Image (cartoon, rainbow, N blue to C red; front, side, top):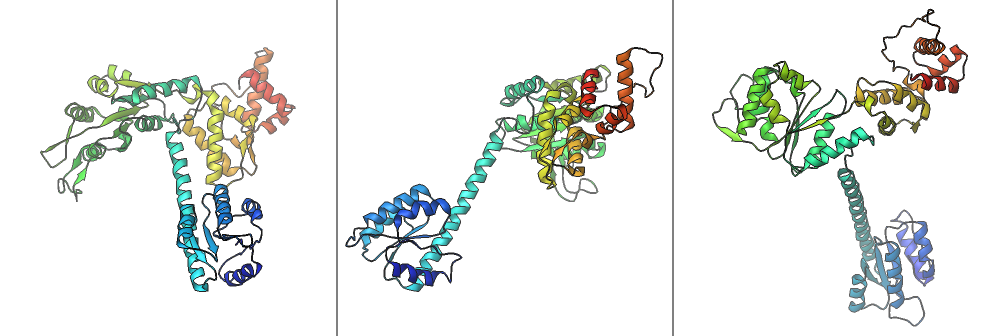
Length: 450
């Protein structure tokens, strides 16, 4: 409360301290900027006049504007002994929340302040929602926010997504397990004209032949033993949106034929009915199988392949984009440190070096699980190579040293490999075994491409 009358301030404080956590009183309005800089207030009670024999309220309006300029969400109640309707209306127009005349009635003042506090809470909630909405929009609008990387190989994938997303062309995504095929499918959907409608993902490898038609085309109640209610299939649910069929290479030839019929007719018929339903979907498929070779071997229909791969996107394995490993690893460190409430802040350069030298047969999914495990087991703020001791290369090279080979480089490589394998990838122990410092061992690892 800011008022030039000390008696008024003391009376207000005696009344309000019973109902508030803290009451700050101030005679000098020139201290308002300082007070606002050092704290936040639920309600500000502001006198209209601070100079003797002045009743215009000009000073109050000036300080009201200063308060709102510094804190636009401030809730200000104007107080004066010389108020009228015109002044009250002006105060409200200029941003005041309410207007109280002196001498006030205690109950009325408390009621006014209570209402003002509720208003302040609502302002805070609105501000919180606006910030959350802005953050969500930034995340949604961030290009390829879930696909992390800056390598040439992944930039080519981004370029293909950009080109194909705005069309309704069917897309086939090829890539090894763990390369992020579903993320690419979702990115295509989010950048398409269908983004406001459903994205429905179906793992074709997990659907049995007996449930294929029921899952994809739907069924009518009573059409078979467990059909206890009418149920739309995935095609109907995805109507107007995108249908993602993952692991399509696992379909048997009879199921491929049924799928082809639906794609050609753009209609599905639920089990137990004779009434076809029109469908309007954008189809995105994915597989980790050599689908073109399967066509040559007559295990995948060529006409179905023509239907599903108007555009083909091939995802690179992680071993072909090793420059993206630091970005991915740091992302997973941040994510799992938060998830498991661990005080792990970063990953060391030595650890990143080790991750980049690993072959990653499981691709990004294996890297993700490796970082998750390291986060769980680590007691340090920084992940070191030892935190990834469980990563071992499966190489055909023998553990034993070939004593018939006198090539110094090859002998050194064999000895280093043996020491590292002997200590399950623990660089410190391997270095000690070899009589080297960790730095020296890392230099030799780099030299031999280990």
